[in-house]
Each structure stands twice: as C-alpha cells, then as structure tokens.
Length: 236
Image 1 (tube, rainbow, N blue to C red):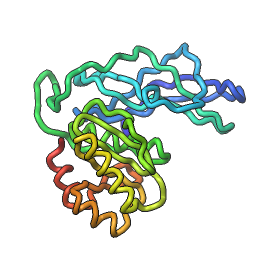
Image 2: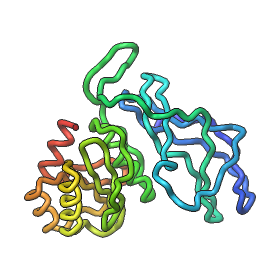
Image 3: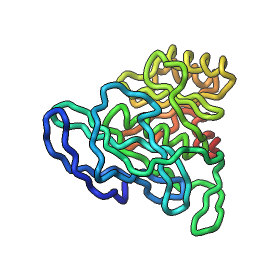
C-alpha cells in the first residue's frame, strides 16, 4: 500500500488493552499515497452502529492538493470491540468534479493505473468498489438511498452500484433489482461481486446492459462482461 502514517497509541475503552496504530494509506488519482492525519492526543471511540457519513473522512493529497473522501481509520480489538481512531484536521468536501489532476504544478489528463486495497472484510470490499468508481471518474460517492436486497448500495453522480461481499454468487434477481432501481432513478448501474455470478445472471446483465465486475482479494475489480470492459477502458 505504500507509505504509512505515523503511529499513535490507542487504548481500548472496553478491555483497557493498549495498541499501537498506524492508518493505512490509499492511492490518490495522481498516484501518491494518502493517509488520514491521526490525532496524537485524541481518544478512540467505540463503533456501535455504522453510519455511512461517519465511515468516511475528507483528506487532502499532499502531492497534488486533491481533496477526496477515504475510509475513517478503525481498529478491531481482540476483545471484539471496534474502535474509531481520532483524526486531526478533517476538511469539508466541496471541490468540483473533474478528472484533471495537478502533478508537479502542471495539469494532466487521464488516469494512472488503479491502485487496489486488499480485501479482508466486507467493509474492504465496499472501499475497493468506491475507490474504483472514483478512479473511473465518479465523484460524490455515498451510500445509496435504497438498500438493495443483498450487499451494499453505492451512488454517485450518474451511477448506482451494488457491492456484494458475500460468498454466494449474485443471482438473476439481484441483477434485475439493481437495474430496476437504476431505471427508476434514471441513472446507469454497475454490479461488484466477490463470489461471481450465476450463469443466468450474467446473461440477463448482458441483455439489460449492466456492467459486471468480480472483486478479487487484491481489491482489483475484474470485468466479467463486455460492458464492464468498456467502462474500465473509458471511465465515466
């Protein structure tokens, strides 16, 4: 993953166990690693209920100045408690959409190679899909308003995505439900699955023009049909 942020001491409020934590870095579209700045004096809090807006934080890339949202740093204590690590200097995300990036003071067009994040948990799968959508050029990625029958729904300007981190191949009904929801919102859609797709689901996706991707454990979305190949090559 590249550079790691500085380490901070973390005490679990449930079992009082001491940890040393360093936030993982994520790849900016310019290729530079970005890590949330940790608050050395802050106190970790327990995560009891997940709220999408609280799972992400705005961090500015030191190399190109781009402001994007990244997963809020968390630590799982062996006692079973999930801890949210305090972050210093969070910024509001208010920059306009666009795929032009400043590198070394100059503006360049195009995308560097996608930098994946290793998938170990369901949250990692959602993060990988969100990073990939951002790499394609979609902005303002958020939790979808409507919850899909399975997995997690993501939405951005012009796209509705479903991320299925289960070990069950996505079914024909899963694909049809995503397509119907996207139709009602007059937007395009894309499906990400960790376990692949049933044969009839792949055939239906081709008929409905739904791009299908499989998330491998490295966090790299692999195109399954021609529509996904086209989206991967052209972006948003």
